[in-house]
Amino acid sequence: MHNDLVAALDIGGTKIAGALVDRGGRLLVRAQRPTPAHEDGDTVMAAVAAVLGELADDARWARVTAVGIGSAGPVDATAGTVSPVNVPGWRDYPLVDRVRSVVGGAGAGGSVVGGAGTVAGGLPVALIGDGVAMTAAEHWLGAARGCANALCMVVSTGVGGGLVLGGTLHPGPSGNAGHLGHISVDLDGDPCPCGARGCVERIASGPNIARRALERGWRPGSDGDTTAAAVARAARAGDAVARASFERAAQALAAGIAAAATLVEIEVAVIGGGVAAAGDVLFAPLRRALRDYATLSFVQGLRVAPARMGTDAGLVGAAAAAWDASGAGRPATVAPGPSVA
Image 1 (cartoon, one colour):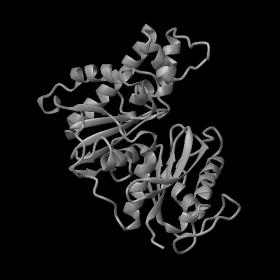
Image 2: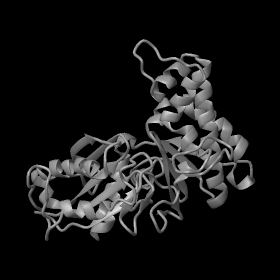
Image 3: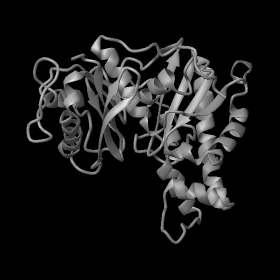
Image 4: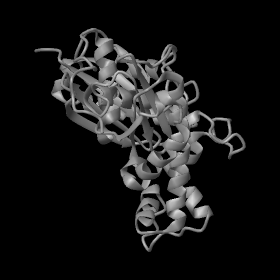
């Protein structure tokens, strides 16, 4: 039997998703659990182990050669630790070691003890931030395919990002390069959980879009939905407060994107995540604001594009990291592909 699959984990503040992924980036088996984000670290890890256990129950686990993890950050890829802002129980949490203990043993393949216990395997484990994972996916198979220099962003519960420079994924020494969400774009702005003020994430993430709209008088409909998706629907229907909250988010994103483009001369910014599902409610004011911030001649051609990989981006990107860790490699990330509009 060929060892032609990898296991991928996508760990965020809302859900922990897993999949078995082939060399073409196809997700063959899926598993998912809610993230117990406000519980202690070991409780969160138990959910991760449950996802891995469900994947390992599939007979195809015997073909897995490596595990890739895309986690909310910051991450420390060198130490194998994570400190997600939205998961307070994980601070310098030794995630790679804990995952290795779940997929421990020797040799490829294995079995599960107790449904979510130890999986024999001796598999290499690779860790990258969720923004880097999304970037790897979009560069491999999505909206940044064929681009030599790109910024890809996840705008959802938090705001993460990753960079492609010179045609190569650039995670940086710790795995956090391109983490645009914690660049300050309002020096006297609201305190951010990261400890700084006025971060892009504090302004542009989904929960903060909704928080700001509620503080300024927006009220949800009869369903009581107070998410950013509900604010987007209200903005689309003409609610001025809802529209203003998205415009403020777009301004913060534009300032951060322009700063990144000025620093490293990116050619495209790809935006994904739940907030990007708002469509023109977000992208129209974002493109307008970007003209106000990306003013120098060498960044005036900067393009903004919606991500193409959807909710699978984190898993596909984690799989890309796993393929790299396996030693088998994966299809080249820079290849002729569809142009980015």
